[in-house]
Image (cartoon, rainbow, N blue to C red; front, side, top):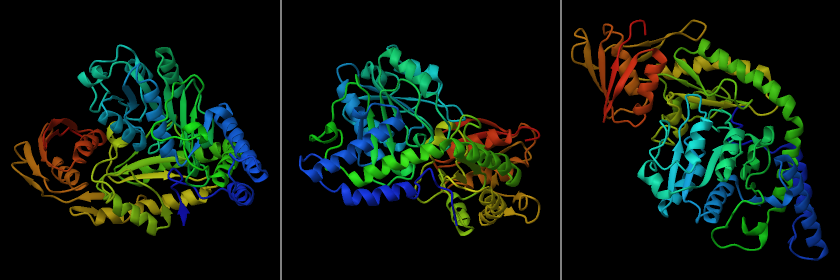
Length: 496
């Protein structure tokens, strides 16, 4: 079995295991007590803090350990906004932030704050100039063309000046690395603190730039679960929310998990020592996947920035595929992968990341390689992937995956599914009540029977259709003419 879901979590690093076992014997006492056992626990805690701070690039007294990365993000957002509540109540976030940040943004709105979402391009990257506009004092209008979310226009104006901005260092679903340094400079110029979610990038190196707050999660780099970190740089206004105590400067109240903290710091130091070699090696392997998937799998799209990306992560989507079935097929073939697909039982809506990028969510697969992955494992994955996709497509009504060929066979769509006169250049497809990927399949069935300039109107009430139909047009070269409620209008382009 090959575990290709490192972006979700990693097994305990050998160094973390050794440190954890040692700290269980030495770090069980209360580090706030002056007796010998307490002093020993305090020494372990202080040493772990110094080691983690060195890896992050901050002062030890700026770094605080939390019960999780999610806790670090929630408390970081709430504390920074509370600390600057007299300055401004507008929170600026990228549209592709982790759900933990977006949930914190929703909580901020519920108590009267406003939120401005900054859009991204098809690679998942924010425009530093648009982000700078969003955090600037003049950013109280409708926002740029890429702005989305419920706090545009009057909502943003009601929030006044920006109190905080949030930006991932690298995206958790597609691996795109964000221009943090440029955005941090713009935030500093505007006098707005920037919180960076560094959960995915921290194992690979420190985050550049003059950011103000940073969050991370140990299980992302081979540390134990239940340990996160929050950095609040000196000079950043911060007011911890909720009941507090004297531990971790009130930013993570409760008894410190010293064995877990020691193991987290030790493993971060260990993976950093291996990072340069692993970066070069894994980047070649993910580049191989990026190049080969479109060759091996018909109607597949690799998403995310091809260059400015994490070294170990690659994401692609496959047309006419039930996402959950594909994950099960790959699992049966011996590969543990993840997905941002809308076609899974865990969600009824498309991934907010893929939606913000405007790319296909259908049949989405995220491959994130753990350190030590061999080229033979990747080659074996590429050998089994076409067969898995073909088998899943063959089980979707109206789709037949023919055997043979380098890609395991071409994909063929059956006819039917439309009403109206295809010969007359217009046809209506009623896909209401049908879920992803069926609306796109029904569209693809009939569009090829139309003359150039012919129009297909697709009626669909599945939320994923709003993303997948325009993305299908982008992939196939047809023209998406717009949406009116549950009606989507597609014009055929010759040769598409």
